Image (cartoon, rainbow over all chains, first blue to last red; front, top):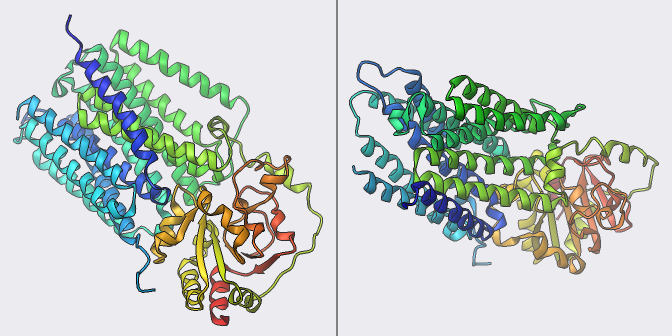
Length: 102
Length: 464
C-alpha cells in the first residue's frame, strides 16, 4: 500500500516543531524581541498562498471574490514581510559590544 | 517550473528560515541570520510566481498590491519608536491571522486554483486543513486586535470578566468542532462562514479577560497562534516552506509564553483564564497605614554612587515611559569615568514583551555584554555597593520571597535588597503594575528618589 503524501507533510511538520524547540531555546534572551519580529516576518510566507489566489482565474474575470481576497492577503502579508524584516534589522543594528579601548 | 523542482526550492527556503532563527543565538550572528530569512522569503515568492506561470491576467494587480503592502511595511519599520514594539508585533500578528483567513476563504471559493478539487467537492483532508487554518487565523486576528488596543491604551488594560465566561468559551470551542464536522460532511459554505465568525468571536473573548500585566504572555501566545495558522494553510497548499515555518513560529511562541509565565511564577492556564489584577485590589487596600520611608535628592544619590565601587542598574518599563534610557547611559558613562563598575540587571518580564528592555538599552547604545539576565546576575547583588532601580517595581519586591500571602509570592525577583544601599527612582509610593505594595520602599538601606526618572538621572549626572 502506498503512503499518503499527507503523512510525509505531517512528518515534516512534527520534525520542524522539534527543530523549532531546540533552535528557539538557544536564542539568547536579550534577542527575544527581534525573535518575535523575525518569526512574524517569516510566518508571512503565507503570501505564497495569496499569490496563487491572486494569479488564478481567467483573463475575462480577474475580480472574483477569490482573487480580490488574494490581492488583499498579498498586501497584508507584504506589510508583515517588509515591516518585520526591516524592523528586525533596525533592532539588530543597535546591539553593540563594549568598545575595547576602555 | 515543475512541481518537484518548486517543492525543492520551498524546502530550501524552509531551511533558510531555520538558519534565520539559529542566527539569533548571539548578537554577532544575528544580522547574518536576518539576511538568511530575507533570502528564504525571496526564493519562496519567486518560485511561487514561476510555478503558477499565469502571468497574463492578475499579475499587474498582484505586483501593485505587493508593492503597496511593502511600502507601508517599510514605512512603519522605519518610523516606529522602540518603546512601541509590543504594539507593532501585536498588530503584525493580526495581519498574519487575517491573511490566513483570506487565503483559506480564497481556496474554499476557488479550489481548482490550488489543486484541491472543485467547489462543493473539495478533498476531505484539504477541507479539514482549511478549516483549521481559517479558525486559528481568525482567532489570531481578533485576539491580536484586542491585545493591540490594550497595549496602545485605547482599551483599558484592566481585565474584563463576566459570569459564565469560561462556560461560553468552552461552548464556542465545541461549536467550532461541530461546525467543522458539518462543513466536512455537507460541503456547505454556510458552515464555513459561521465557523470563521465564531472563531473571530473566540479570539475576542479569549483576550479581553487578560490584564495589562500579562501582555508579554499574550503577545507570545498570539505569536504561537499565528504560526499554527500558517502551518494549517501550509497543509492546505501542500507547501513545505509554509509547514516548516508554521511549526517553527508555533513552537517559538509557545516557548516564549512558557518563559514569560515562569518569569511571573504563573501557570499558563492561570493567565489564559484571566482576571489577574482583579484579585489584587483587595490584597493591596488592606495595607494602607503610613510607614516611614527615607527619601533623598540627586546630590545624595550622586554621593552614594561616587563612593561605590560597583553599581547595578535595574531598569523597568517606567524608564522607557519616561524616555530616560539615554540620560541613564550618560550617567553610567560618567560613573565609568570614575572607575566604577556598572552592570545592568534585567528581569525576564521587564517591559511589555520578551526582551523588550534589552532592545531599549541597545537603542541607548548600552553594550549588550554589560546587560545580564536574572540568573546571571542575581548573586552579584550581595557584593555590589549600590543598586539603582529605575522604573522597575514589582520585579524587585522581596515579598515574593517572604510573604506567602502576596499575590506575587514565588515569582523570581532580583535580590536588590542585598546591596549595601538601594536607590529607588519613582514618582510616588504608589504600587506598581501588579497593584501591590513593595516592601523594599521601607527598608533601612533604601533611599527613595521621588522624581521623574529622566530628570532625576540628569540631575545625578550633574552632581557626579
